[in-house]
Image 1: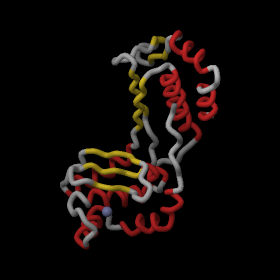
Image 2: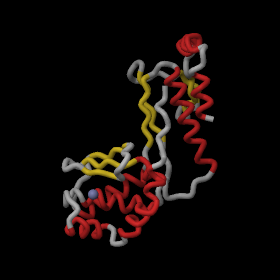
Image 3: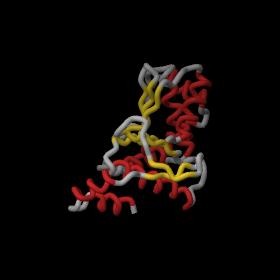
Image 4: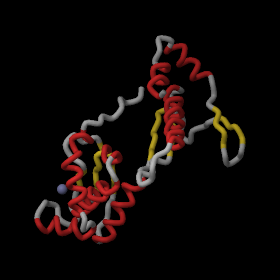
Length: 199
Ligand SMILES: [Zn+2]
């Protein structure tokens, strides 16, 4: 469904389509005022959209898809109308696991970034930035637990020494389960590719 929409907006009638986009206002239903209102960005030419991400602990159901389809259609519409779009989606359980484990070790995570890394599941800098491979959102929760414990432990031990593994075990005594899963299924997970960038 989403790719069909993308193709429609890039058809040969692109110039006419662009003119149409400029001519028409975008109207959205404001659930606070209960009225249909014309979208006016805070910064001209820029649209910033925040939408709730998946709850990765829970079982997915067909209703979950509505949120992503809506966000996708809205984002594509805003881009089509010429706005510079910044779309943020949270992945609550990734943040929560890191924050809780950092508290346990008495360290601070300053920033979390999802990245498309081809050979790593995560990385950690001494300044407190933790990078996650986005593919981990497709892994079972206990694997997210393991990567969180691993990366947060690097804020204490920036190496893979026995002291480091003892630090991982402090926040996740059952760490071998997550390590074993990544060893067995990591290659399959790495095969997933991010969709092409929106145009
Ligand atoms: Zn490591």
